[in-house]
Amino acid sequence: MHTKAIIHSHWVGFLCLAPFLVTLLIHRLLGLSDALMIQTPPGEREAHAYNLVMIVVFFFGVGAFLVHAFTLARRDRIWIVAKLVALAVYWSAILMFA
Image (cartoon, rainbow, N blue to C red):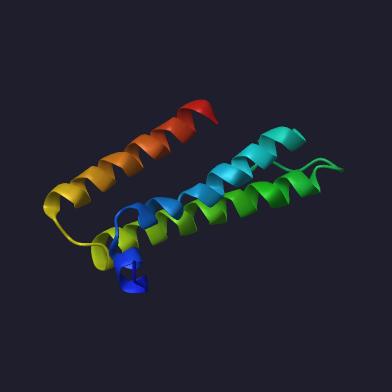
């Protein structure tokens, strides 16, 4: 499989969403606080910084996924709709279970 064929394949876009799941798993394993927009108590600075990193990783992943879906992947309408539905399910699952 050539590099161009790999970049144009549909599954590559989903790899952009995986880093956030890894950061979320690490967040749970370390037992960090979920408080983000409140004043951080002493000793919780690491949790606050890590939460900000998670937000950045999430939005970069979603952005890369959308860029791939609309520009790099083969643009069949059915695939774009399917990817947007998958993104909505991904986002909803994170909001419900994270």
